[in-house]
Image (cartoon, rainbow, N blue to C red):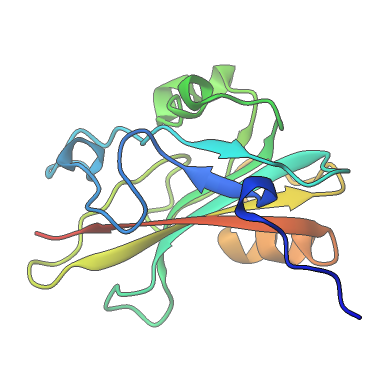
Length: 166
C-alpha cells in the first residue's frame, strides 16, 4: 500500500506578498527602463526536514532565446530568511546579504526583473530548492553551474509563477 499524498498543509510552498500564484507581477519589479527593478518579497513554508540551505532560480521560458532567460540565481539562502531579507537582492545590497548571488542572463549579480518584448504575456517561474548540503560555489555562478552543484542534494522544490506583459 502506498503512503497517502502529502496534505496541502505540509507541502513545501513558495509565495509572495507582492503577487499571487499565476497573477501579473507588479511593474515596480520590472527591469531597468520598464520598472524599478525591485525584487519581489518571497516567503516559504514547510521546508523539508534536513534542509541545510535553500537556492532560488527565476527564469522566463517564454523568452525568444534558445534557453529560458535567467532573471535571478541565489544560493546559500538561510532556511530562516524572511520576505524582508529576500527583498535586498538588488546589487547595492548584495555585499551585506546572508546569501550568495549568481549571474543572471544580463551577466549581473542579483535580481533582473521582467522585461519581455512587447506582445503576449510571459511566464516567470520562481523555483526554490531545499538542499541537504551547504553549496561550495563562489559568487557569480550561473544557473547551469548551480543546477549541477545541487544534483543529488535536492530534498524538495517549491514553485511560484507570475506573469508580465508589455
